Image (cartoon, rainbow, N blue to C red; front, top):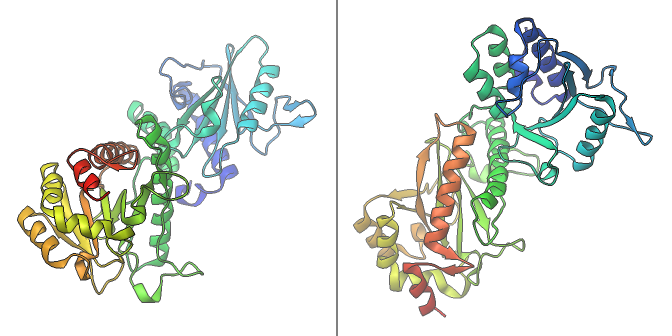
Length: 389
């Protein structure tokens, strides 16, 4: 009996079990093996056989210029030698792919050579971007293709083992292990989104960093127990962690609401880290204009003390524009007026990771266009920003 949860982080064992299931599927033809490749026209023949497997004796000559390049899995039929480089968390290396391509070439004879990299990424990783002879797909899409096309016991075992296109939801905020597991998943998803931003043509280039209040031994901070209830991952304009001349006082990012299973994109206006008083001055003078612009674009006001993880002062969400304007007037800079966030949440209970990325990417693009351009306030906010110069 396969134990899907126990082998996902053990790459060799995962590859062996994956290969075993693919070989078992050959009893009914090569359709499942063919569907691993993202191109619908790709088809292996009924005579397909496994010829290489990680940490096993390979039938391939895998030494090139005195250097050994081990291919995780390779199948061949009469027309094609199909190599697979499988990654379940480790980074994919460009040199590794070049070496494996040479191994396949020197073993192919008259067969066509196909090299496929499969990773946990949801967008193509950097290693494949300059190698036009290497195909790429994600484990999420492999699971989705097999699940969509087949209804067999092997299909069920393969997709259950991959267990990839399922967002596990938010953690129990009182359980350290649950929070750490979700934090890793959340950070991985955002790093993939960071690369996808390039395909969305966001400018300037935004860089992600995420932080959670954890003590040095990875346990939850006693001062913020249970913590974190919320997580904000800012996307910054450049590598030196400044977004514009206003510093940390105005940043756009993805916010996770642990209790309600929600993610959203928010503009964070932080009076606590206000550079030269820009946030407070702007909101006091033009708060009503800013709130109206945000609410006209379907956003809400989220307000909190500076810390978003303080259980004694949980964040408040204001969905009425008149209440939001009044809150700005009465509380700015104190208590629930220290951190003002404009954005909106979306439930992600039933969304796949790929769908979540697409949603967040579009919302980041929309709010970037609303609020920022090259570090300046955009649209109805441009005049407001100029008044503060």
